[in-house]
Image (cartoon, rainbow, N blue to C red; front, side, top):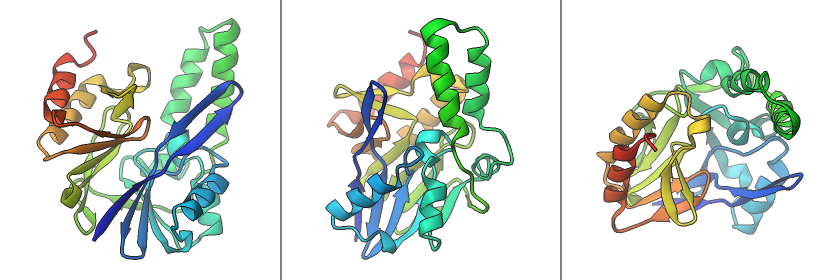
Length: 245
């Protein structure tokens, strides 16, 4: 039996305070975690596992939807402490997860910072510092589009927010783990923030791709669980609107 457990991890930095929502897929005692949060998040992960009655020693895999700092920031400390955990991501993301290529988000922030001044520059400089603090792995395993990683759990390559971004579809539960492809804000399902989408056209194509799945619930990394009787219609409206407004 597949059980989906949405974690709620608090992130605080300066005046910023918000939650992110990694996911644990549980099959019997075997645990698979989807994304691991910001750098230095391991204590919060361990505490949340304990509160939910999950044994982190049963964690066998971590699936990274992509290499952004808020998704893989804690991966190095996690696998250092729990070396039996296997880390997986898309082939396109492997060079970034291993640090063989420069973070695309860091490149974006450095370019944007060239034209900023005042508070905006101060914020961007802090963002760059956090991006540079991410520690990379020595090894990760490649996932392919359509691959089944566990019973009823399918990998869907959904580029746009970032090349090689992946989502996961849990067929028995009709649930999509969307990574950063979609967000839920104030009870409203929406498309990923335009500022952080590296290819808007690919983002829309990815949404069209997942639209074909039988979905009753979406778990957004930013916003958490979203369910609606009209979820297909809402997705269609998001696709049709795109980034036009």
